[in-house]
Length: 165
Image (cartoon, rainbow, N blue to C red):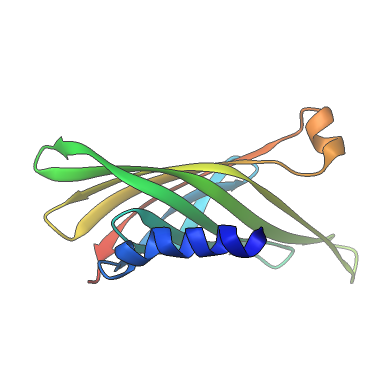
């Protein structure tokens, strides 16, 4: 059954691969307990799909926090607005975060990491043919304990960038 689903998935994206484009951008990410920090984004988009990735982090003498994410979307055109094209997508996303803290009087860093996966949505507005504004949101579902205690992780990534090809 898994092989059949994989075959259907591949057949569904092959027509879009021939028209794939690469997007590179920079923006802000809310994965740091709601605090917005700079992020770098990259996307491969086709006529019916988008594969996106991001990396963001902060670092100081006593603290660091890094987050990495990956998402796949089924996309569809919505309409043209103000001379630009709007695309909407829905799919699945995942992220991994690692953070560390060192107390001023200690020589040891305390480290923690976590991850979440779940449903994601994407809104992309491309204008002037190659400049885009992108907003992605993921509703992270973690362990059963976190879900039962209503402790979810949502994350929003906004970016602006250029379409390379």
